[in-house]
Image: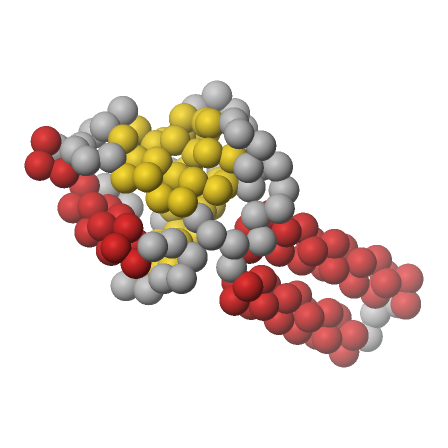
Length: 148
């Protein structure tokens, strides 16, 4: 997995982010305003607004504030592969999936647990993780994750 030159494991603790929570809140509020402007039956409109509100609430708690028990609070990149450390103390071995995003200010890692279903999309940006760890993660992904 890792070459001997870059074999130092990365342990990246993830901090809760108010700015990410604010962004998610803004996106979901704008979605509700768009729904209100559409000519829909009032019952259907109510159902859609409730679904968007509940989805936004869950997304903010799970991804931004890390309050769900299956929220990812630490990511480890070792020579053996990736580990996801969840808030409830579980550790899941994972593999890096395709379709991640690597920008100078944002990294989104799609990590698929080996023995579980689904994909965890973990978002890293300056302020949510240590600046030095963020830089090292970006550099290592550029060098070693060929299909990323």
